[in-house]
Image (cartoon, rainbow, N blue to C red; front, side, top):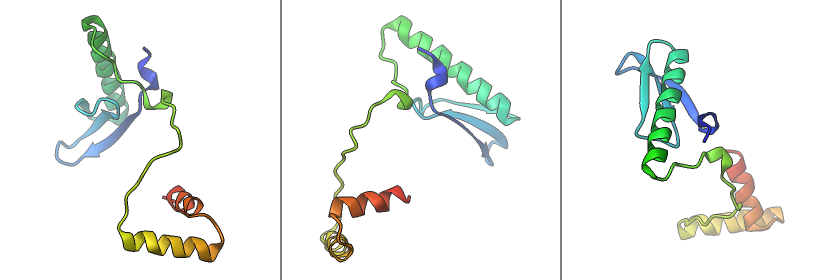
Length: 108
């Protein structure tokens, strides 16, 4: 599996006074470095090593988020008053509750 399909990010750690490289699919891994470029290179190498080890041990390897297929459906629970307010707003706008909620979530 190619490790370049995973989701990486680099941020500054005030506590460590270093840049920290992270991989979303491997939340327990991190790599500290003095520059963002080295932090990214370090976390990518660490992920590659872990993926290799998992494969050799016959353990499951996390699927990259970029490769996942999403249905576009999920259920969310809200308090009854929020449900009422959204239903009223949707009715006033002449759209379905689903369309209103989708539009609001799309603006996040």
